[in-house]
Length: 420
Image 1 (cartoon, rainbow, N blue to C red):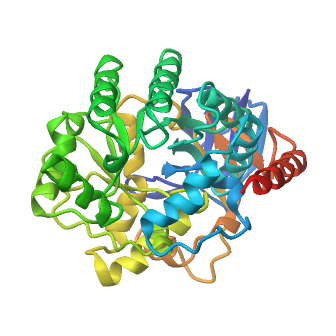
Image 2: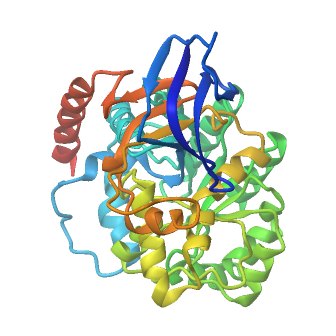
């Protein structure tokens, strides 16, 4: 199958150059796009007239948690959390323990739909389900692919549920990496002991992968590391060689000192910023000082809308970070650089969105970033093309029955809540 976008106002996502063209799109991972002025002898299976519309590269989510998808509206915890550790203990660690295969599938399907409708065709996810570990990543993978979303998955390995569950997490990771691209997921330094850390790094090296881990999201992570290992979190990770991999993703990085920033800046690893989650958990504010340029953005399971994430990063950053339009957009797009330089598949040039942007003012390359921060919203996304396949047409999912997925998700949500 092939798609032709006629009369498109194309925005080059790297240079921000604007030009009107016709775009021929090949289907498949690694498929190409071609620009034509003259449509004579150009034939495609699907033709979409984009007169008055804008076309640009689709988005990617740098850090997601699909396992939180059924949490929206859930009952309040038995005890009101008073700090971040209690938020984990009474909410998220309580929820993830009761997830089963059907709940995970519903979470993945509904998240994939939300991603597509928000313009993201690639998701880097960090999953936890200690009650259903074996096969959990394959369930997510199949659900994402059913909707048409490419992915880079990992299972959250941790000692917090016992060493047997840690071993199962390692096994699930290795089984998945034998057939699919992925990362080695670790929860955080304070729930990963020496033996599990060593085994995880060994797995990283054997599969030429990277570690995806939460880093100093709350100061408790640092306190635990100093008391138990005599060093700060990033120093501990660096000693294991985790920062040597360009595939490593360090989540949050809020409570880090200057030496840790230097270690990250001089390493190959990437930092993923999650502003809204940090606000929600009241754990602090992201500051990019001394971290270098390897920073991209995630949603941390709060939602699946990357335009919301970049706007939050920009607005909150006015008071706590050194960020302007250019920096915000660079962080928004850096995830593509991460995926490309590490040769991960599924984020090629044939991943596009069509924007029906009803702006009351002129838009061009000189002021696009102002429109990007203050004007563009999810509602402007009309069509989404993933690996050359039209997965969203006129804001309707084409690959699955959205009503059926939502019905299934609501059933699984009720089942989950009964366990909480």
